[in-house]
Length: 191
View 1 (cartoon, rainbow, N blue to C red):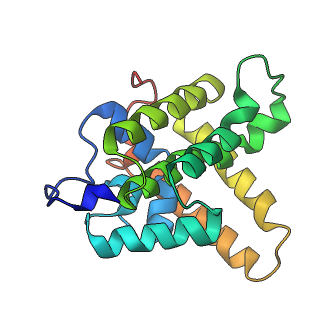
View 2: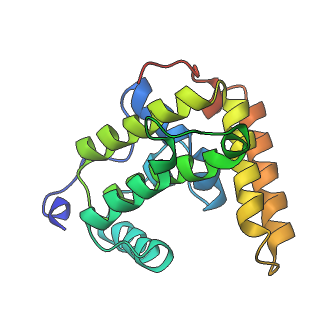
């Protein structure tokens, strides 16, 4: 966990370029849902030992990710369906943003958790972002597919599913309608 050896700058979790913002904003709905701030990597304003520990716990508990290799393997798993030569059907695109957005999300979580360095995190996130731009043509399409995938995932678990789905829908709608929100960044930002 070497990235915590030195004091990080106050803006360590703030994306610096439009491309960095773009990939951070593709999971803005999760950041907001997790009580974070969509302006920042993995929704976290603070780059601290406690925030890093929290991200490592979530990655281990929810994703079975304990190190960089496992993180990159999971990103590969979430994006493998879209590799060149794969026959991607319209039905798959309709729910696929759920996995693609989560790939960028866990990369951001891995950065905060000290599992991956910032530059490599963004390099990998930009690869995922280019896949997203290939299959989706607007923030609206991306968020609709994300919600469809989330609904599909949650439908197998009835414990509070309807409330969680309604909350994600509300957040996505709010983000999409916000004049100065993440979706105000050009969809066609060069990644």
